Image 1: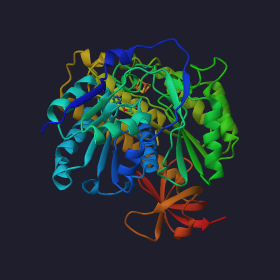
Image 2: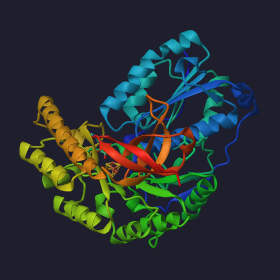
Image 3: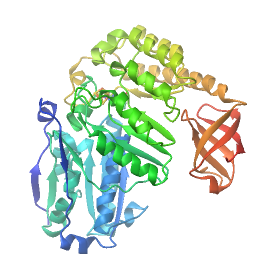
Image 4: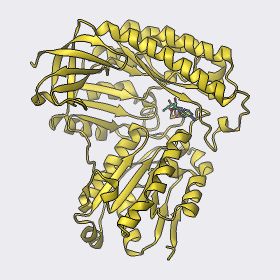
Amino acid sequence: MKKQIKEHSLPSLKEAAKRSKEATKIIHEEITYSSRLLEFAKNRKYFIRTYGCQANVLDSEAIEGILQELGFVPVDDPLKSDLLILNTCAVRENAEDKVFGEIGSLKRLKDINPGAIIALCGCMVQQTHIVEQVKKSYPQVDLVFGTHNIFRLPQLLDEVVFDEKRVIEVLSKEGEVIEGMPLARSDRFKAFVNIMYGCDKFCTYCIVPYTRGKQRSRRVADILNECQNLVDNGYQEITLLGQNVNAYGKDLDPNLNFAKLLELVAKTGIARLRFTTSHPWDFSKEMFEVIAKYKNIMPCIHLPLQSGSDDVLRRMGRRYTVFHYRQLVDELKSLIKDVALTTDIIVGFPNESEADFEETLKMVRYCHFDSAFTFIYSPRVGTPAAKMEDNVSMEEKKRRFDRLVKVVEQEAEERAKRYINNVYDVLVEGTSKKRDDILSGYTETMKLVNFKGSKDLIGKIVKVKILESHTFSLIGELVSDE
Ligand code: 5AD
Ligand code: SF4
């Protein structure tokens, strides 16, 4: 029998695009669990797959926190689960295709375990057309919830289990920060800490301002509390997270800014402090000074370039020019010793000319990026760029993409050579995938290092001398474990 659908609310990109002038509200959610759901969940198995960026990784940690408080236990095999959750990404079409492929193949789960629940959440379901498609063509999906109402998961699950309905609740608008959600951290030494949610930049290609809503900053006290707790629990590395961290605080208090927050977190004494993502438009002098002043702020900056052509940058709505970006890079390199720079680049934006593309290659060579995430432009329904006409063929875009990847790799290889024969601090994360006696970890500049050593060193920061460099990793030997 076809299950009925219970719609609490459906997403609307139009609503999501609106921005109120109201100050951010901070809400402490007391998460409550019905006794019948607690009884149902006890020792049942869940599996969660996370697509996309670190914001989704943190959302998944909150979802797992709730599920574990309910009594669910994690499993590694989706086909052995009673509750399967796909936390999705909408940034490019191929991420969405993968999710639809996976939902299709997971129909099998219902043959093996007819009572299993399949849930979809994350950025993809914030889009009207996706929810319509799921409702119509994927009856195996029992629950759809959005990025703004994770705290409602217990109530929604209760309805799926006990009312035997398909349940949909996706909110489009928000002006709030939800505090007090439990987090099941996926790592014992490294943690992400959200400092803000959403984005107000509206770059013309990007779906994020619609799927994650208005920029909302967390309060300094709440962030510091979380960070101090991590330090007290033996964490070695914190990454402060936001779509555009340099805009932190503007929605809370005009006197607050990211540089001030960064300094306060550095003072908690965490061994390694990182932050991502920075927008070149908001990068302040004060930020440079704080990064240069504190040794525990890692000299590794992710600064998305997107394109090396002023014309393309203007049409992307990026608010900076190539000249401005170059100046930033020059300043970073002169003020922060041995700084590593990483970036994101999109090729094939509508009407990108060969000359525009060559400008991008020129910038990659000028900036000497240590690594770069490269993407072929993917039109996103509802964004301004999706309405732009485009006269560049997909074959040409793919050719440019391959050319870009080559130059990025050449630069990365060249940059990696500087490590040879020098000694670096490495935070040991685990053993290599292939060999048990080989440890792997990251330098302060986020370069992956493999070296021989004992497993006891996992979670420690050790000194490693670099012997060989490859494009994406280094090989070294342990100098001392002091
Ligand atoms: N097409 C291709 N790449 C995109 N990105 C964001 N939106 C799109 C899109 N529509 C890339 C940008 C961003 C990174 C997270 O993903 O480079 O910085
Ligand atoms: Fe998207 Fe631009 Fe916001 Fe980054 S800054 S999330 S690219 S709109």
